[in-house]
Length: 425
Image (cartoon, rainbow, N blue to C red; front, side):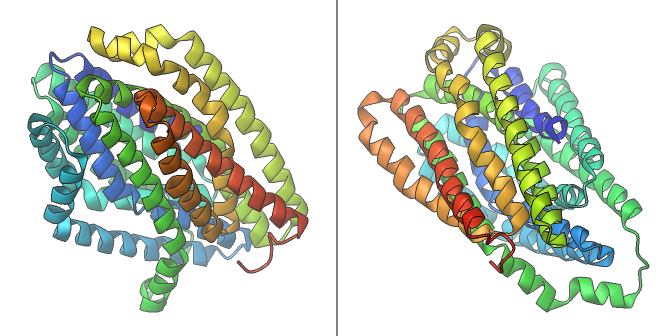
């Protein structure tokens, strides 16, 4: 799962490196803005991945294999319905999002073009959430690795071809992503269908697609939806606030955030393991298995976080020069790089506990933790540290990440003391 997850931000790093070597920083800034907006639109429905994993892992633990298939098909139908609504309302979504970012007109036009192209991949992008979520839930990480590597490998090759050989700019990066997402969607669906062990008849389809099942699925994931929106709004506001400090700072923050996302996805490998193992333990109602899974994934996550921080510290200069040749961006990135070095140690707790709570089906606790961390801690620190400029922005972001880990840690401790993990949530 670590290998699978790391391949996702590696794609963003390639986007950054390709665009960072173009003469103007506008292309990199436009993709930073466009990516932040498309992340809100797509990852706002990230519950399709997390919710599918949690429900599937519980069903996997009960050995009710038919139900894992029902969850998959119901989630696919829900994903396609959401993709249709995104396509229907995209003109208003894009207008409001770009207006709220308040960036220069030249960047605005490039970002709008980027978004219009990325919209075409809505069905594939949301189905990929379901596919990866199901694979993790049934403990098939190799399938998830194969699917994600195909997507990001295709994307990277097309990035290089479209931008370097065809002379395209941010639009080439967008087309590369669209093509890659459809390729991985088709491949992932093929892999899932090979591993679903059940007879298909009208009763199976009726159970998978009945309205009540979809409503239950949607209701159970409402907490994750709100939680994800709060997270993405925080990230978007980070980008927007960085834009007020100028194009160079915006581009430097985009470069540094790509490195932070690389770490995030790597740490999420053990969070994904926690989702699957904790979910299975809950499904089997085995308390010792639950605590063994929690302790094991916590220790492993902490070791990986320490390794990431060390590698970032040792490779600072090489990483920045690999991603851009523009001296102004290099100087700005070096100024704020210390926050990226600290990030893994600060963030590891929230990522690990996210996995535990998803596997346990405690989605409401994750929502309240996120709302507290974003609405109170991030906004509060940002206002208090406004005089520090971009330093204050990064400190507020690290405070936000810390608050997520601490609040979930307090809730986890309480559940453990009260032996409440197996009680109805």
